[in-house]
Structure formats: structure tokens, C-alpha cells
Amino acid sequence: MSTSKKINKEIFFGSSILGLYLFWAIGWFVYSYFIGGSFDEPFFPRSNISTELISPFSEGYFLGTDLYGRSLFQVLSAGLCYSLGIGLTISFFSAGIGITIGYLSAVGPKFLRSFCDLTTNLIFIFPSILIAILVMSVSGQSFWGLVFALVVTGWPGYARISRGETLRVMSLTYVESAKAVGVGPFRLFAKIVLPAILPFLLVHIVLGISGVIISEASLGFLGLGGSEYSWGALLSNAKTVLLEAPFMGIVLSLSMAGLIIGLNLCGDGLRDYFDPKS
Image (cartoon, rainbow, N blue to C red; front, side, top):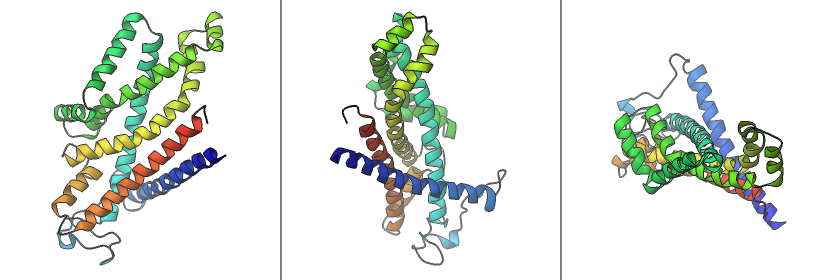
């Protein structure tokens, strides 16, 4: 009983925090594309040197302004939409590639299994952030360049989980029966294997989004981000005025920490919820 309460609390608090951030992001999207701007020319915070580094709750600015005179709340809002968008995009592509390669490395021909395992292990040997920096240096600073760099380093984790869970599911009696009656490999994957492994992958996807946001912020902090509203790029700007305007670094750090905590709580709660031992 106590375990169930703990699981429910993790999912509840994590989902509540994520709900607030999603409400914030949707509100900014509506304002940027329907109220303050349009789909052709969405609204984005504009620089104004005359209002730079205004403290929070001063001159009508809720969170103050950054070193370019932009409303810090508006800059954070644009960065939140960017972070969530890139996190979901990269997790979707990484999961799709990883699930496919993991399945092939479990049930494919021997040469294909060896190739998939070798490729996965080679990427795992090197630190993912170094590979991402290398790819970004070659592809250049752009949204899709960043997506490509983080997908390259993100799919092996999904591939390993997919391979292990596929081997477990394929050894079950009802799967052996389905193969015996002539169910093809693609139908077997879509109808039996994928629904069985999806709950475990869902946990990894939720936790993976937080990892993508941290990786993207790290690249943005190093000047390799895909947008000027990347929270990493904003933190890099904040460190240059840390003594003059410490509120910038504090607000940015707390905002990013809240989102990561919400994702991790939700992921941990889902992991316990789907754990057969629970």
C-alpha cells in the first residue's frame, strides 16, 4: 500500500509541474502566433537598450529584463517553447530509430544483428556531448543541425532497451505460437512486440526529454545552440552580468530546474508503475 502511495505521489507531482509548464508554453504560443503576431510574423521579444537589466517587479516587468533590454518573462517563454519542441522532436526521432534498430538486432539476420550491435556500441564508447559538439561543428548552427546531432547520440539508448525487451517478448509462449501459425515479422512487430515493449519505452522517452533539454542547453551555453532563445544561450549571457544582475541566472536556473524535476518525477513514477514487481 505504501509503495502505491509513493508511486501516485511521484506521478501526481511530476504531472502537476509539467502541466504548469505546458500551460505556460501553450499560452505563449497562442500569444505569439495569434495575439501579438501571426503565423507569417510571430511575435518574439525585441531588444531595447534603454530598458536593459531592470530588476524584477520594476517598471512593469514581472521578472525584469536581460542585458538586451528584453522582457525576461517573454524570453523565458520563447525558450520554453523551443526547449519543449526540440525535446519532443528529438525524442520522437530517436525512439523511432532506436526501436527499429533494437528490433533488428534481436531478430534480424546474423550479419545485420552484428552490424547493429557494433554501431550501437561504437556510439556508446564516446561521450555523447562530444559527439554532438563534433556534429554541430560540421553541420553548423541551426535547428535541424541540432536535431541531427542529438538524434545521433540519442537513439542507442532506445535501441538497447528495445533489443532487451524484444528478446524477452519473443521467448514468450504466445509469441512462439504466433510464429508457428505463420504470422509475418512485420505484423508480429506491430501487433505483438511493439505493444508489449511500449510501456518500458514510454518511461525512457519521458526521462529522455529531460536529457535532451540538458544536452541542448549545454550546447547552447557553449555557443552551439540552434536558437538565441535556448536556455543554455540565455545562461551564457547571464554569466557575463552575474555580479551586476544575479537575478537573471537565478530565474533561468530555477525555471530550467523546475522543468527537469517535473520530467524526472513523472518518469520515475511511471517506471515504478510499470514495474512488474510493484
